Length: 221
Image (cartoon, rainbow, N blue to C red; front, side):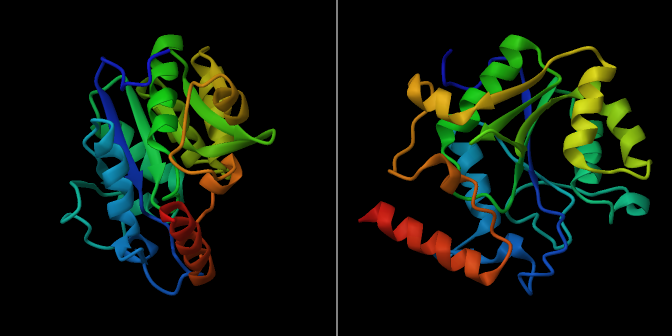
């Protein structure tokens, strides 16, 4: 498959609605290598030809990209709320969701994820690392929205379970792509020598920021 973004229009959203309780400040604007995390996410999406929008942010992040607010009555219900708000606003058949706290993901991985979703017409396309399915990044079909809204209004708002249920509801594939196999086949690449697990370092605490800074420093050297 080509690593270029798919030709059908695809919405691209940065999920920035977390509570950031362990960071001590809104992590979307926490600085990594002197650049806010939300800017890292915007730069990644723009590098593959996608214009980002920011979903569910607690702060005013409109200086970085257009924002999509959560439904006020559902704004404290986690990333699923941001996903539903974003899918309601997009006219694209698919939408990419990138969390603001994964700044080390390579662009080639995002491009391949998008291409696979469109070619296979999957309801949901995600990545696995060492056999563990990662909830994000994810490409989600707009057709999954009604099922996701039902999950959002239920007692169980676990995003991964909601995505699996949505795929089953619309009888479309739930695709999980093992990142190790993509690397071995040369379908994706990274400009650094990090193992794939390091790409998925979530920035939740100041200590996580320090670890990410150290990885970026090694990459530059």
